[in-house]
Image (cartoon, rainbow, N blue to C red):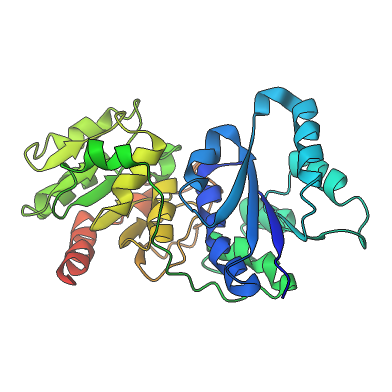
Length: 337
C-alpha cells in the first residue's frame, strides 16, 4: 500500500481538538505506520497537538490574519498533495480550505466532513426530542465520518506523549506519589458541581491527596483547598493548558464535569469520574472513565451549559450527584491498584 497523506482540519476548541485526536490511532491502523498525518488548527490551540508525535506536521493558523492569511496557508497546503482530507470542523474556514484543496469532487483528494447534525440539535434543544445516539460520545462522533475510508479500528494504546522536559522539572516533585486531580471549573455555571460538594468529597476521603486545577478567575478553588490545606494543592491560575494536561496525565484519578481536561484523561487512558449534568455532547469514550449521572427526563438540555434550568431546584442534575456517591466510586478506582 502506498503511503497515505492525510490532512485533518480542526481549528478549535480545545475540548473538541482533544476528542478529535482520538482518530489518529485509527488512521494509522488503517493506512499503516508510514501514514503521514497533517493537522491545521488555530495557532493558540496547537500546543495540545504537539504532544502526539505521530502527527507529522501541525499547521498553525493565526486567526488575526483573516481570510487572506487562510488563503495563503491553503496555497501552501495545496502543494502537499494530500490523498485524504478530513474536515472535522465544518465551518466557513474549513469550507474555504476545501474549496482550494479539493475544488473538483471527483478529482484530487478524497474528502469527508463531520456533520454537526443541526436539525437533530434543533429537535433536542427546542422541542425536547432526542434523536441522537445515547450517550453522545464526542470521540465516537469524530470517528464516524472516517468509515467512508474504511477507518473502523480505533484501538490505540499510545502513551508516548511528548510533554516538554521542563514540565517534569517544574512539577515532578509535586506529582510524586498518588493523587486525585479535581477539575471544579467549567465555562458555564450550570454544569459545575457545587463547591460544597467538592469540599465534602475531600472530607470523605481523609487519606487521599488532591490537586485542584482551574483558571485565574476560579477563586472558589481556594475554598475547596481550605478544607484540608495539608492535603489539597490549589493550582488554579498557576498552570498553562499544557501543564494542566501534564498533571492530568500523571494523576491516579481525575474527577471532572464536562471539560477539556476530562477528555484529556480519556485520551491519555487515565481513570476518571465524569460528573455529567445538563450538557449533551461531552460524554467520554474510553473504558477508563466512568460516568455519574441522574436519570432526569429533562437531560440533556443544553449544548455547553448555557441556558435556563427548567427544574425548581436549579441544576439538580449536578447537585443531585452526591459527594458520598463520588467518594465511593473514587475509592473503588483507587483500590484497584
